[in-house]
Length: 366
Image (cartoon, rainbow, N blue to C red; front, side, top):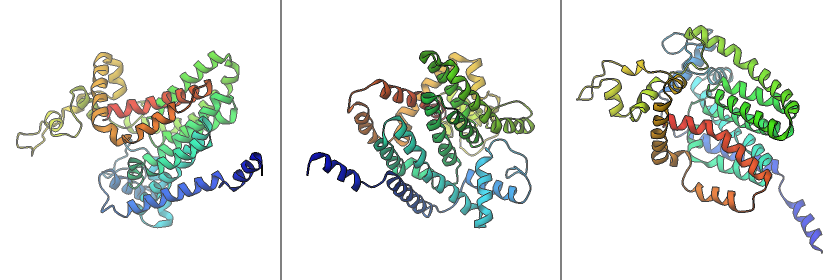
């Protein structure tokens, strides 16, 4: 038997990629369900999400525990909980179900993105790695909306990469759809909107493809706006001002601008005027600070210093949780195991640029 026949037989015996990916998704789901079973109780924001889903089912609208309309919590996750609760008849179980399912389905766009950027093998390895990363497993077993957000964001990254590479209208439209829906799960998507717009302009100029890029970007903008504009109007109705988010960042800005850790006793003492015995908080001075973007615009030098300080906190205290140290050798091996070409450099550059909004947000809230 010659070498070509051996290669053909090896290719025939290889398990199909879709079957491997399905096994990864299934294993990820089982792992997350096992982690859910270890949770003794719901706490903090989890209780609020469960109550908001109940309020939606009962026809009370998008209100929080106080009974007032809220813009602090993004609407998509509690709405998904409400829909699932119509089948499961339990708001808490529905929250866990939505988190675990989307936390497992994240492997699909991860695989597609890795395959499109590098190759199929890389896509499968990335999906398998994400299935067992402790931080993702942990968050996929809690009633938090991050899993839905990351699922949508990964599909946006996949379709936006293909839009930049192929200039296809369908990729532009789908990138806008997924980012628009993701905006309903987390307002930080506006940073990815800006990043893609800038990147698309640079690519169009460098490749001399201005006309080819205009149409998919226009479809991207239209698709994104279909989901974003109604939510912007809702935010205006609730907050009384035009804003991209209902989340208040003043507590984190207050902490970072004073080189304090949010939630620490030092922060409580400074922001809440905690008494020396640590029992009484009688005023919240953090209410006087600005939101994150306004703070950066009005105080760029102080904001830069704050970002540097918080980046140090992220690097020294939080990075190992976000990216375990055992991953670093694998990242190095993946980056430098073979020679670089133009396509590989473009793929890595794209991912680094698209990681920048997440890194900035992580640093500011470390």
